[in-house]
Image (cartoon, rainbow, N blue to C red; front, side, top):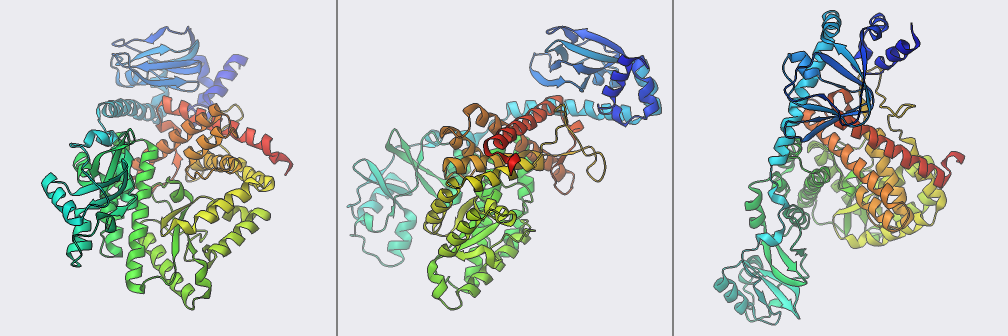
Amino acid sequence: MDVELVEVRDFLARCAPFDDLPNEVLDRLPARLTQRYHRRGSVIVGVGESNDSLHLIRSGAVEICDPEGTLLDTRDEGDCFGYSTLVRSTPSRYRMEAAADTLVLEMSREVFDSVAAEHPSLRQYFGRRSDRVREDLASARVAAAAGDALSTPVGQLLTRDAVTIEPEASIRDAARLMTDSRVSSLLVVEDGQVVGIFTDRDLRAKVVAVDGDTHAPVATIMSPAPVSVDASTRAFDATLLQMQRGVHHLPVIENGVPAGVVTTGDLFRLAQANPVYLAARIARAVDVDSVAELTGQVPGIVGEFVRRGTAPQDIGRVVTATADAATRRLIALAEEDLGPAPVEYCWVGLGSQARGELGVASDQDNALVLSDAAAGIPGADEYFHALAERVCQGLDRAGYPLCPGDVMASNSAWRRTVSDWAGQVADWVGAPEPDAMLHAQVFFDMRAVHGPESLLDPLRADMIERARGSSRFLAHLARIACEWQPPLGFFRGLVVARRGEYRNTLEIKAGGTAPVVQIARVHALAAGSRQVGTLDRLLAAAEEGVIGHSDAANLVEAFRFLRGLAYRHHAAQIARGLPQDNNVDPSTLSGKDRHRLRAAFRIIAAAQDALELRYRVGQM
């Protein structure tokens, strides 16, 4: 066979769906193809034109645009185009233009029909791809047309100026002002600053119900130092803040002065029963079964958010807020049965829950940080073991599976006093053996879900300081980050599994999001940052000069794309009633997404190379 034909044959063998054709067919096919060169900017197939060839890009890139000129997709090396008109024998609905100097292999309709007659899977493959193009176009139009009410700044929700009162004013005067102004809350202001909030609920619970003194100052029963938001804050973020803090009124600050109050009702009317309110319903669940029933709605919520085109980081925050709400409610239910805790404690979310990056069907990782006083109280450990068992089993029933590695508060190794935890962290950092590294990297992603953060703050500060000061520990973390290999071949093309259950797919967590999480953790700890979320860690590390701004920005975009792709994949599996996994078939993606997928993996691989060089991973 001619050398050029051999090269074409080898190229076809690497491109779907031709890689599934028998060897004898591949041997004969190159001689039946035509090779054409198109200069950048030339239109290969125009809108309304007939097309009698299947085009396979050997080098270069082609843009697919709608009749209005909107870019719908980009195809590059190994991608096909023109199959919609070929398979359906209809004029082209898109303009296909060379985005660079491009070399294309053309398969005529006659050749295509003859090969497809013997191998029907070829026609089926391009038929499915044609349907996918139409679905992508429809999705793009839906996303473009859909308004996201929850992106509205809260300042635009205020219908009146702030109603304020001084802290020395009497409760009676405050009640009269609320009645005259027809508001359910007052901002307590001193020297122009909000120092508290007084609500009708405070009046009922702290005065009327207990026959309190109405002549006492408002300051005696107000909620001091209330959490507030800036007028530019998105309604989405304000809603999450309400869910996390369990508050119904948020003071709104504009240019440093109180502008008004946004309430749960304001946000609820804006969202019109948006699924973000699921957490509020969970907080009122009467038993474990009710919690599980409500969290069972999470997969459907993810599918709805994906359909709306919601940003992946926002989807992750909502899924995480739901898990937080379920955890807190299960703790409250456990305490109702077991009685109050003998000492202060903090329930800590670890891993993806701590980072605000929970996905569908993520397993649980958690721990308990107990006051040091627990060591001297008989029965304290038995109490917290019973509480942790109830909560972990309840989370399992609620759709958050038990951790296969037993990283849960029900395991005594993950249930310690503050002092014991400090000693454990010192051991992990001082002797970074494989098991120590496995546990440390999980624990270093921590966040208080229930209980006083004051138990966690000194531990976190000590942990970060120890890690930052141990180049050996950071080097071991870097080695772990470099062990997660993006699925790229020798020439930086995508590599899929060739056999087994996940044949023709690639794992976007193990080769994509997981290494970014690891890379971000190393850089953030080296910078001494207290940030926990992956994107926040990368940006904080860039600010401290640990990683270049452009490198951080590239990793941020790669992470966002991969998480969005994962949520879309999960949503599709949910819609079909399938269990969720992270194995994506690249042939089901648009050319634009395949291009972005390759780019994301290349960014990650480059970041790993830099990490290897910086920490001399190869010498370990």
